[in-house]
Length: 155
Image (cartoon, rainbow, N blue to C red; front, side):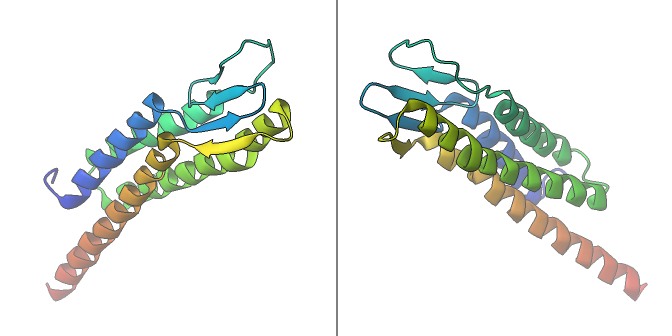
């Protein structure tokens, strides 16, 4: 049923995944640069003409996480498929965070200068929220599945 608690968690995961698109993820403050990393682009304060890394993988991974969270709400009759999609969404969210911390931020720090300071923005915290809601939804779907299997055993 759509009115289950895991449907609310999946909707909140969808909403927070979409909200990541509207907030910056990180900022790098250097002596001559101010670079802001968002899901859609790398913006700089002064136009020095540098070739910044493409952020299309970030947008694709977070967009897919949000889309899968939304689709998973409506396949409530097939709990095993729901659990598989949620696990895949969790994996995508972990890949998103790994891309930010292990590829984009070090790449931008190396491009800007050696004394650049990393400042985390609100978007990085918003990208952790879908992960939390997806884990909660998975937990409650497993609980429902155990309940159904226990009821089937009694028949």
